Length: 352
Image (tube, rainbow, N blue to C red):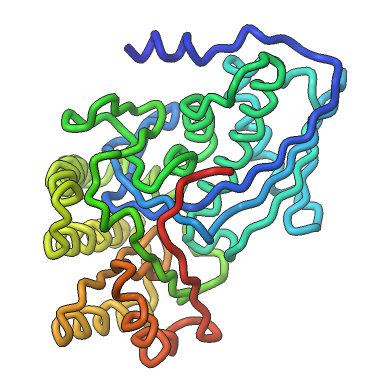
């Protein structure tokens, strides 16, 4: 099946002579069941599922210019960023067999984020998803067809694994799992069976640390290769995903909270117990977690936390509880954020 899909994604289009401009906005996403650990080429060691976000996004414009000596230029938020180019070049090289027409184009890229870069809010996911959409937009123009979202997810994955989950929404699964129809390690698929309460779920992103995190996600994934608890963690993720699918279908918020919070802590437990070990959480992260749990116990409001690979805290809650949760953030949690800053986000429907 995978071989058949790989052949399907290979393009027969060749170099062309016209310029083209494509602009896309792609959102970040926040995993509920975490993917941590991977195999070449960007194959997840365990399946994951995520909320696609709406207001944490990357805007990317790509100017495709015909050239006999193709090059890549990139501006991030208006400034040239040559340090970003090797990663983009590696991505373009990796997808060459699936997009041979790119060999005849220089790529002039202008990109910006609505949130801090490299701080653990999946900027590589939104960035690579936007770039993949632009490339698929060019392919659609060349072939006279519609943009292939499955291929966009496939390409995005080859730039950043979690980028596969930023093409569509509001819930996306990535990685083969026996309980998810058409699930694949090669691209993400929408999970369409969720209870309506999850279609409007809210996510407040508390910016505990806006700077670049001390250990990149790429390094973190690689540290799972010889991790003493890796096999058990991968089994745990598969088990959690099976349970969460039932919860998502039924709308059982107590069980949703239990699984999502345990997944967040399990992710960081892998970091704490790797060799070398490292800590991305900060004191403010733990203080926020404790206060969320106290607030939930005192009010019975179904608010919970999750964490990505960083210090920032994602506060998840149903839209009907928005006022009470924002009051909690303003009165208690913002004190642990840099400059009291946080982003109010919600589930979204993918790239535009």
